[in-house]
Length: 97
Image (cartoon, rainbow, N blue to C red; front, side, top):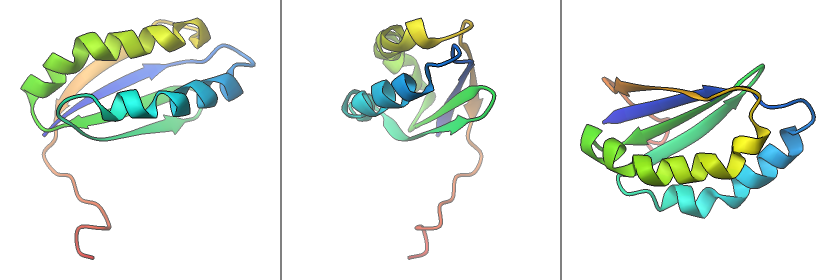
């Protein structure tokens, strides 16, 4: 598996719109080929983690990912930074259920 982690800050006062747009894009996010899981972390910055089945699917999804980022770019206080990682272990509490 392969992970893409993107970090950015929201403009002041845009948190509610971010949640609305993010939730409204869920079907488009789920449609990304090779995407297995995704989640967001919310603090001083937003961190979006996407888990893909392979490096190839993560790279192939980038044109569609960039289109999704464009839909929320007006909410960002800075340019998003993206890093890619090999996933060496991925467990969920549901694996043993």
